[in-house]
Amino acid sequence: MMIRSQRRAYMSLPTCYFPPMDSDERITVTLTDDMAQAIRGAIESGDYVSGSDVMREALQVWMQSRGMQESEIQALRSDLLEGMGDIQAGRVRDYSADDIISLGEQRLRSSGSGYPKQRDRT
Image 1: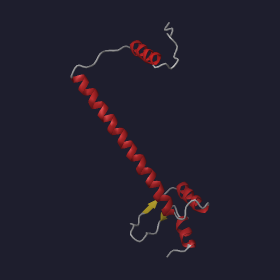
Image 2: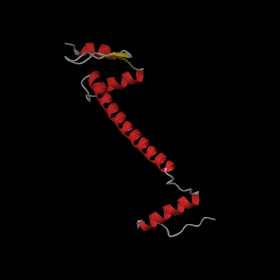
Image 3: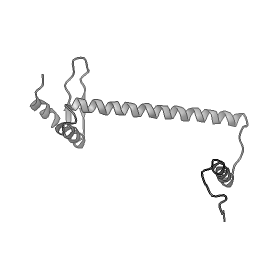
Image 4: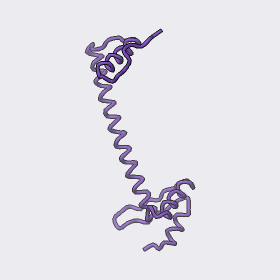
């Protein structure tokens, strides 16, 4: 069992050692001084009991973020494949910037958003 003073000794080093839980894997992580200080501050403020708790939560947030990024990438890939299929099937038209603006204005007007009736393009 690690006593508090031992944990502080570990946490004072830029390379932080997080003692293993019973069934967890022990990993040594090298951190910048600022990162180590942030972990020490979180523990000293009482927000966390140990550096392991800080790192576990940080990894959970990171894993959630990565999962969302992967979902967004998959959605973009799907949209890209759909667009490429439209191009190959000839379901595309050329639009100028003015055409796109006009279509957007029409959609806004029909949605009842209170968008101005017509914009001066001169």
